Amino acid sequence: MSNAHNPIRSAPARGPHSARWRRAARRVLAGIAVSWLCMLQASAAPYPAHAVTLISAFPPGGIVDIIARRIAQSLSERLGQPFIVENRTGAAGSIGYAYAARANPDGYTLVLASGPTTMAPPNDSALGWNPLTSFSAIGMIGTIPQAIVASPAVPAHDLREFVPYARQQGDRINYGSPGLGTTPFFTMELLKSQQGLAMTHIAYRGQPDVMVDLMRGDLALTSVTVPLVVANVQKGKMKALAVTSRTRVQALPDVPTVYEQGMPDLGISNWFALLGPDHLPPDVVALLAKSLNDALATQQMQAGLAEIGLITQTASPAETLTFVRSDLSRWIAMMSKVSAAETTSQGKGMK
Image (tube, rainbow, N blue to C red; front, side, top):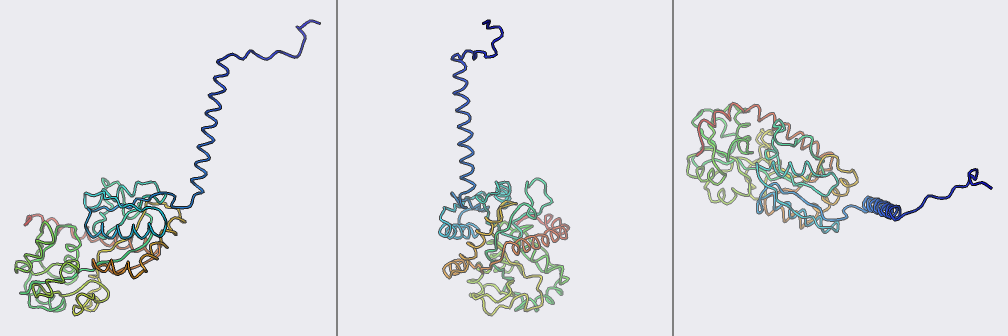
């Protein structure tokens, strides 16, 4: 029979090059399979499956860093993985916030946020992040109230007595702050605008210099976080006219709050919250929020934070997000409102 009509054809020859190709193909397929398996295992692993980075946007040893380390330790104990504080400092906190905002939203990079004024306004495109839209809220940690303090020479014992005195003195009343855009600066500017005062702003390089000149009588007024003034108030070196918390503080029990004195808009405290990049998975947010609130409920945590003047304050993720956005929006509006005051203050120079 002729082979010309045989429908069965012999297989093509299989040379060494064909064998190498098959081996390479098997290795590629095996690699793909392993990669998919790892991805499936990672997605199935409960959060957190490895260490979590908690960004502190300020240097070691400061209030933000101290709070971050205490929160990190407690979350590590509760969730069984290390929570490692990483200080990414500079540009008044903006470098750390920007890093956290750009991180992968998987729950492995969080940030200890401090507000209101250290979270810069969102109208600066150079920041690379927006405090109103770049973060997922996990929970509140607490607040550190301010004390509005005056020189011993000021003939007033509280804010209600200070306001008519300041009106009579006009721009001869000086107030000091650590610089434009700080919480003391905006607190004093808000007092000016709401009470129709004409106080003159003097900018300093830091809060310690402000306090020295206040006690010396070169300044009439400033606002400072409560822990920094307690000793000097008790020694009579300055007068505490009000505290900005809703209730009186234990360290200064005789000092009335701004709420008691009919000035609730001055209830400006430095607040602290745990945030993550926008679009964090809801289950990760829920787990972190519960762990954070459980930690803040312990007597040990409350006592430790009270040592640095912090009043613990818990809130759900939704409540935290609403508070942060509302408070920052308020300050952004205030920054625009006092832009003229900033220009005037810059002309006076730094002391």
